[in-house]
Image 1 (cartoon, rainbow over the protein chains, first blue to last red):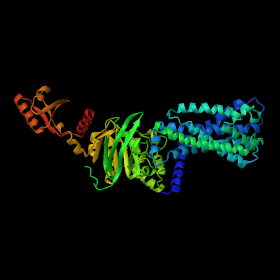
Image 2 (cartoon, rainbow over the protein chains, first blue to last red; image 1 turned 180 degrees about the horizontal axis):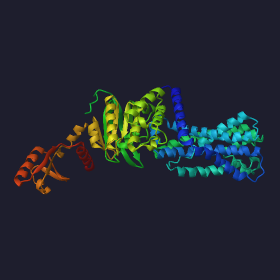
Image 3 (spheres, one colour; image 1 turned 60 degrees about the vertical axis):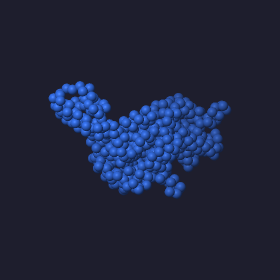
Length: 251
Length: 316
C-alpha cells in the first residue's frame, strides 16, 4: 500500500477511535453538565465580590472552561481501556499506537471545543464583542488541541487506576489556572509572576482572548499563537513518544 | 473428525527463535516453529508456560525481545499482519457500554470493512453465535458465555486468514463451549488457519491437526496428537471395577503392573502389556471369587503424553 494511502487509512481509523470515545466516554449527561458547571463555579468562587467587568471576566472564563473540559476525560481514557482490557483489543487491530493516542486526543479536542461554545455564546448574549472572530476561533481550536494533548500526557504513567491518574492531572490542572492570567491580568503581575505565567500554555490563550475581546493583549498576538502552537507540537510529540515507552508495561 | 491440511501449502505463521523476558525472567525462551496455512494448530502448556505471551507477540500486542515471527509472510505486529489476522483473547474485552451490534460495527470500521459487507457479516455472525435477538442489548448485560461468543464474532468480522484464540472456552458453559468449537471446525474446513492455546487436552485432541507443547517458556514437543501419545506408551492401562471391596496391593502384585491408582470405584493398573494384565485380572477374580463389574483397556491420552513430556522436561 502506498504511504499516502496508509496515512489516509490510519486517519480514518483515528476518526473511528475518536467517535468511539465520544460515544462511550463523553456523551454522557453528567460529563457534559459537570464539564460546564465545574469551571464556571470555580471561576465564580474566585471572582465574586471583585469589581470586574464582563469583558475582563469572559476571556478568563472561556479559557478555564476550555482548559478544564479538554483535560477532563483524556487522562482517564487509556487507564479505563487498559483496565477493561479493550486497549488490548485495539492494540491487536491494524492500528498504529499513534493512531489510538491521536484518536483519544481528537475526541478530547472535539469535546473541549464544543463545551467552550457554551461560555462563548453566553458572552455574546451578554453583549461582549469579539474584534477578531477568526483569530479568536483559531485560538479556541489550537488551545483545545493543546490542552487535549496535555490531558493525554497525564495518562502516560502505566497505572490502570483512574483515580491515580486523576490525582496527577489535578496536581497540574489547578495550579495552572492560578498562574495563567485568568484572575489577574499578565500586565498586573510582578516580573517573576509573569515568568511563571509564561510556562503555562493557558496564558497564551487567555492573552489572545483578552486581545480579541478587551483589545488589550500583553504580548503580540503572533507571539501568543507561535508559543501556543509550539506547546501543542511538544505535547503531541511527548504524548506519542511517552505512550510508546510505557505501553508495554500497561499491557 | 478433523481433516488434515494439504502438506504442500505455505506457512501461515513462521516463528524463529522468539524470546521474551519480563524483569530478567525468561517467559518465552528461543522458540521456533511453523504453522501451515489451513492448519488447526494447538499450543498447549501449563499455566504460566508462556502460551499467552507467545500469542501476544504474534498478534503485535507486545514486542519480542529476540527472534522474529511472520504472519502470512508479514512481520508479526505489522499493520499488514494485523489486517490478515484476528485474536480472541482469554479475557472478554468487548465494550460493555455498547451493544453487540455496535461492537461489531466498531471492529469493522477499524479494519476498514465496507459498511454493507460489515452489516451482512455481522447479521450472519450474530445468527451463528445465537445473539441476533440480543444484538441491541448493552454487552454489560451479557453472561460470560455470551460475551465470549461475541468476542469470537468480533474477531471474525474482518474475515481473517489467521485466527488466534487464547483459551477461548476456558470457564464457559457447555453450550457456549460446544458452539465455539463447532464454529472453529467450520472455519478451519473453510480454509482458515487456527492457532489455539489451551490447557484442555480433550479440546486439543478433538480439534487440532498438530499440537506444540510449551513448558517454562521452552518448546518441548511438536507433533500430531496421535504421534505425541506414543511418547507415553508406558502409560497404557487397564481399568477395572469390582463389586467386592479389594485392596490395591492385591492388584499391584499382578505380573506386568507398574502402578495402581484408585479412581472412585475403579482401579487403574498401568502397564506396557494391557492384554496380559487384563487376563491376569480375570484369573485373579476367578481365583478369589471377585465379581467384575467393568474391565477396559485404555490407550494413553494426550493428557498422559503431556504429563510425560512435561515430567521429562522437569528432570532434564
